[in-house]
Length: 409
RNA sequence: CGGGAGGUAGCGAAGUCCGGUUCAUCGCGCUUGGUUUGGGACCAAGAAGCCGUGGGUUCAAAUCCCACCCUCCCGACCA
Image (cartoon, rainbow, N blue to C red):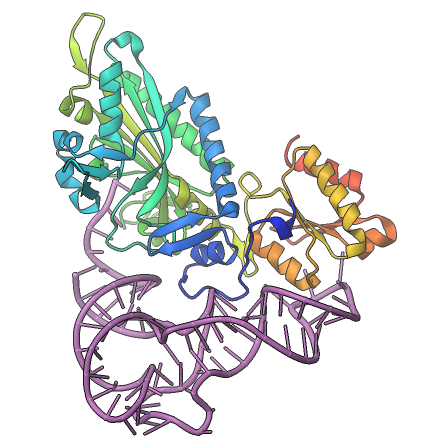
């Protein structure tokens, strides 16, 4: 893709509305557009990252037997009244009346709706277990949106729901989702921490949270630097007695064993193998997909900009062409790399080298391929690794091999 | 919802105390022409503003007064 034709508009100055790193860099690099406080559009660059993250999630959900669906965001208030959560979540729900004067909600989460769907379609133990998931926009009327897309009023979540005949089945699915989560966050390049957590307004008795250490985190864990372990409480480390330090965390995922809270209230029942009617046993599993962008930037940046992990970066390589006489060669290289399955951004603008390099650092694609005087003199490409700023010199063929190796192709 | 800071061109800022020949200014970006091209270029000529919104005070308001809206930060809240 040509830089000059793509929807990229980097800012030279820091945007005034953004204080935290991820918010600042995502706006500065034109990944996001802020409509209003807590309301954002994803521009093409940001959407590429979002899709990459979503596809990693899909891969791991699908391979663990979950099936993707897409539920409505508009929900009648009645289903919320069945579980009493119209009261519990009253403050955060966007509510309004339609032309028939019926009260509708913009879904802040989907336990009630998925339970209605399962109630309608599942009637026998033979249809269980079953896991459904979606990647969808949620709406929450936050009292104080902040840190860009870390806490916003409209955000994208992956929410999965498991349905089982008994607790043993739930335990199996819960463990599968738990390890899928670990694989997802690892693949996204995150250094995450998993802790047991309080189920809160979701209900149920077991839950685990996935967190990423970051200054702007809204949660706090206690950290033993010696053992590198995290605890909920501020008592001394149970292993080495060392004093604990508070560490701020961004919550990126939360999974719950719900039990029958929703299935009982909404009468999502099935017949077991003895002909007895029972509520299905549920679990739910959430990932803050849009928030992951922020969490990843908060933990992968330097003074020049973003350093996207390979698996989710908008492009695999950015070619910086520094000599307009070499544009044709740069375009050919771009085509060669694309033919090998790489996503390539070709900066062919007639800007000074410094502008191009600084934009490349800001955008944070992992490989910067430089076509300039070394290419003119000796056909050598200079490859700069964004994260380490390491510079390598190689031929075109060596570059293809290098990238193939990097991406395990 | 409490406390603090702020709103002037697409972005970033000065001007606001002390109203008026610096009042609409500067840098970046944008347009046109030329020069440049391995690290945020240079020269020349341009376009772009109801100074957040609405009321007041005054001969005169970006500037003073009142109300409201919006944004950021801290806290409370938070699936």
